[in-house]
Image (cartoon, rainbow, N blue to C red):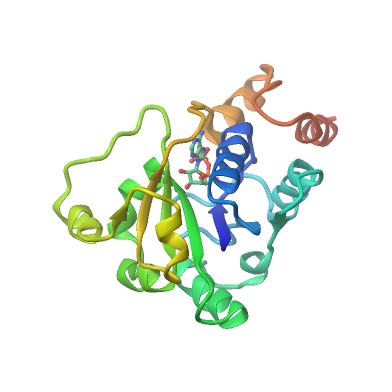
Length: 207
Ligand code: ATP
């Protein structure tokens, strides 16, 4: 079973990394692919250029076996839709292999407004990670997407290539890229919010 973790990673931080490792371990994933977003559809464009976000991501995951940086979205001229990336991965990995799309709770709360959420759920499972400050909203459309799909156990994800939703407990970490960007702009410390390797690269870039 393979995990896919898409994000702006502007920059990558310990809130991404520790929660991803929790899922990797709990679901015994073979591989976890970090896919940095190319052009954004749902949000402002990233502050850092793609090459820098990728360099920071690579530095962050370099010594974690099974964690892989996948740069496919960075080479696209058009905005990146998750559904297209998953179609691509399905094509590459075949129809039978279970794929798990990792999402923080905040991202999942807006999932019904993504491009073709039903198709995404045909292509992959969703693994939703708790994020401090974000609870499940009372939203009929989201509820409709969840109906009949929520499972309580990672083993249920191995039975099918996609279509199920698992709420996976992870280490709660109230870290965000927004806060890190703000701190960088104000010259305040970001130590212990990002891995040391990311900190050194960011400090070099500021010199
Ligand atoms: P920004 O503050 O710029 O919006 P972010 O910190 O939310 O950035 P993203 O790169 O946009 O980071 O997030 C990628 C994915 O990681 C999303 O699914 C998001 O919900 C999840 N995520 C980010 N930070 C955390 C965290 N601290 N705990 C759990 N999930 C997280």
